[in-house]
Length: 250
Image (cartoon, rainbow, N blue to C red; front, side):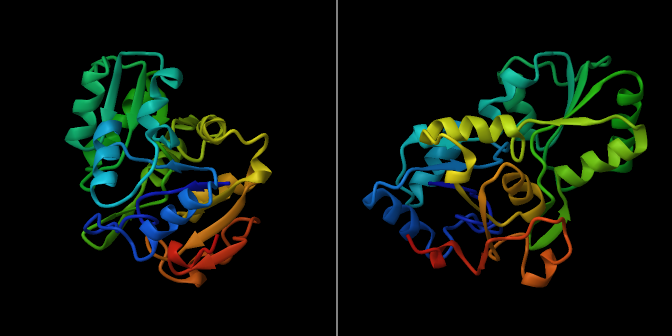
């Protein structure tokens, strides 16, 4: 059984095209009736639109085998009075879901991916938290890639806000246990040791998967470009490192 990341694993971070061997890998799983879940940290657009896009570029999968943080957000973040940070499309999606994303007295701040965060925005986050707002991250991605450059991911920003305020945060998507538990239920696994997680994000996806007992395959087609970049990060190590998902034989 597999959990399969999307950005940097199935599709290229630059132009969102399929990575070499990715479509073939999913096709093999389908032919052999291997159970899998597509577990992505997509927050840039509504879930159904991202599913439609993945199918439009050649990926064949059951929509019930897909999960992203937007699909579990309501069960984790109960408050509707929040201040949200991220791409305009993310803010628009939250508004459609019934959240007040511009609250002047938010009960929580919610952080997602954005290329051009400013110091003023970070200062605003800190003030809200020091005034009692809880901290939520849509996921804990270590690095965000845009136009070939690597920016601090949501996980890095969350750690900065925690360091600045002394307040801990909660994660909606990967690598939260709740999110992985939902994905486990999708494929009907009894325990995490039956599952292999495939991802390009060692810190944001695979360390957490390993802590739950999953096997871990790191692909070098996204955030991490060479094996040396994971040496010395955490006590958990990859079970395998491959260049692309196409090298993972089933």
